[in-house]
Amino acid sequence: MGGETIIPPTFTSEEEYSVDQDFSLPSLSSLNPTLLRDYLRMKAEDGKNESDRLFLEEFDKMGPQSSSPDFEAYHKRRQKVYKEVLQSYDQLRVRSMSLNEAKYKVLSYFPGIWIENVGGKKFSDYDVPKTTSLLLIGPKGCGKSSLVNKISRVFEDDNFAPERAQISYNPSVGDGTYYLQGYMIPRGSASFCLYDSRGLADGTSENINVIQNWMNNGVRHGEPVIRKSDDSSLRRRMKFKPRELGWKFCRPQMVNFVIFVVDAVSVLKSIEGHGVEDLLCLQMINEVFKHPCLSFKDDKPVVVITHGDLLSIADRVRARVYLGELLGIPPAKQIFDIPENHDPVTELTIVDMLRYSLEHADRNLPYKNWVMENV
Image (cartoon, rainbow, N blue to C red; front, side, top):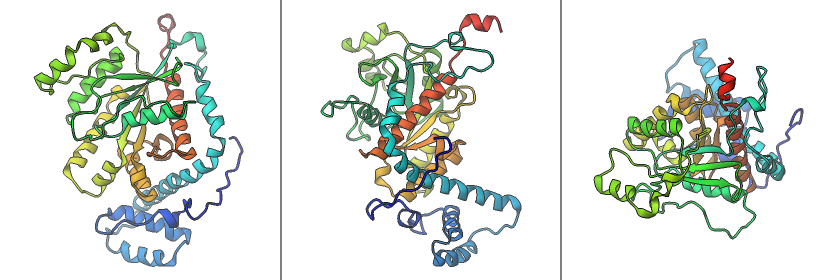
C-alpha cells in the first residue's frame, strides 16, 4: 500500500524463488540468443556469479555487435523488464499474507464502484449495468474453462462443490466449449459474470467477425458459437437442439471488458521455433488481440497465461516478457500467470487479475444518452 516497503521473505529450500535457483538456462541450442544474452547480462551485473560474467563476454561475441545508444538502451530496458517480472513472484509471496483482504475488495464489488468522477461527471451520469460482464477468449485448449473453475473456487465457501465449467480432457478432439456460458462470481451474486467462449478459429477474419458481433450486440448465456467454416452437420446439431433454444429468450449483456487467455507452453514452443502450428497460433493471437474491437478506448484486454505449472519460473518469465513485447502491454502489470496450482499465491494472482479487469470495466462505462445529448 502507499509508502509501504516490501521486504522479500526468507524461503525454505523448497520454496526458493531466487534468480539463481529458478531462472535456470534452457539448452543453448533451443534458446533465442537475444534472450540468453539478456539473462546472462542481468545475472552478471547483479554480481551473482563470476562464471556468468565470463560466459557473457564469450557469448556476446556470438551475436551481432553494436555500440549504438539505441542498441544498449534496448537491452537495458529489456533487462529491467525481466527483473520486474521476476520480482513480481516474490512480491506476490509477500502480499499473499493479505489474501483475505484482497478477496474482500472483489467480493464487495458492485458495478460502477470504481468509476472515476472526472470531467465533472458523477455516478448517475454513467450507464451502469446491473451485472458487469467479462468475456474470456483464447485459442482452443488454452484453459479458459479451467480458469473459470479456478476463479469460482477462489470465492466458494463450499470446498465440495463440483466444478462449474465443462473442461476438455483431450483438447485435440473437438473444439471444447461450443456455447457461450455465463458464470456469476460468486454463485448467487449479480455483481459480475464471466462468459466462457468457444476457442478461436485458425483464421483471424472469422474470429474478428464473431467477436465484433459480441462486442456490438452483447453476449447471451447458452448461445451457440457457429462459424461459417463449421461443417453442415455440426451446424445443424448446434442450431436445432430443442433443449438449447433457451438462449434466444435471454437478454443480451454488453461486454464490459475482455480477458485474453493464452497457453504459456504454446508461447514457449513458438519462441524456440519448435513448430509452425504454434507460430501461426501466436500470429493469430497477435492479430486478434490488437484488433480495435477488443479495446475500450486505450485499454487493451488483460492477458492470462495458463499451464505455467508445466514450466520453470525462468520459462514463465520468458513467456510473459515475450508476450508483452509482442502485444505491446506491460508484462508485470497486465499479464497474469495463473498455473494449475491451489495455493495463496495463485489465488492472489486471480484476485489481482479480476480487480484489474473490473476496475478497467468501470472506468470505460459509457455515458447515458441524455448526458451525450448535452455534450
